[in-house]
Image (cartoon, rainbow, N blue to C red):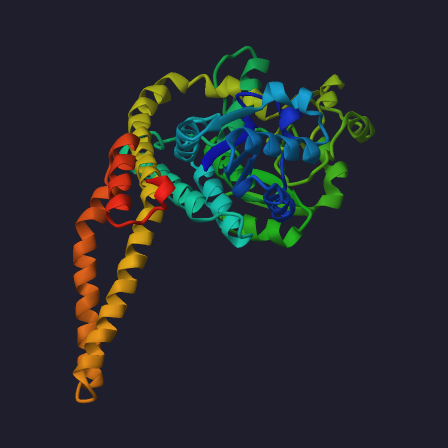
Length: 435
């Protein structure tokens, strides 16, 4: 068996490709079912975020397994494999394990150390378990990766002051406004008229960061207005007006900054709609949705500037050098955890032999116990029989403890296999032709 990951991210594909491969929550169950239908895929889990789609699998044959996952991605996105391949990466075994742990720790994020990815890895594990697509191997890997993510954030300064996608979008807005007036620095948003479309986690973070940068009033639009009102209620020190999505187009021209972050699978703002709005003042769109909420052609309008998640790199590069120094410390922790997982993985090779040894000894124990009890006659009470039964079980466990511990302990593959062969031969656990 092999652990493999196939996917793409902000490092390998632009947003116009990533948005075609984004798997929405309502499609995860069916996608996992489709992946499990491939004969070579034993376990599988999907990580789909605005910056990456990664499919982790336990497969029988790594080459066939990787081809199967690529086939699924091609069918889902309706993009030919030849067109997709330049954007896809695949990693196997040790590299796949290390990659997931780095992702969970925030070391592979657009913004080093960002915290949202950890909750997304938790969600990946939960969905895999709910859909019964993961088993003991991936569950162990996912669980340990989540622990690594927590450990990195608690034992290093990587997460201290880490900016999220939302805060990077706010900082980009400050930077672009400053550049409009000839400054290459961040400016306050106190005088800006702000509109947010969407009322999810990203929008919550947007409000938090907008408030810290001087914004004291904004409009929040969402398809479910009650959800928007519930979000607004959590911010008592900023004035938030809530409206329904149907009010969006008649309100856009009142704002200078528009942030969009929704789960819509299709854009709802394009050049044609913008032309109908009759804009009178310059407007900047900051689209952090994937798939995108705003089409790239809106920038053709003379009064419109549009930015998406790929444009955040301009902000990220401003503080990347400091974060990369801290990341080196975090990487050493991740590599230690990878070794721990791989040692556990290697020890699984001993499990069939250990189970066969236990099974054979249990048969012998029961046979000998039954002979002894039959000789004791009817005067031997039920309580005494239980005591003797427990005694014999204890003896077997004591005898097995040291060899089982030795077989599972960290060692080279050749050493473990040599030990397994000796145990198989001594206890006649293998067929003659295998000895």
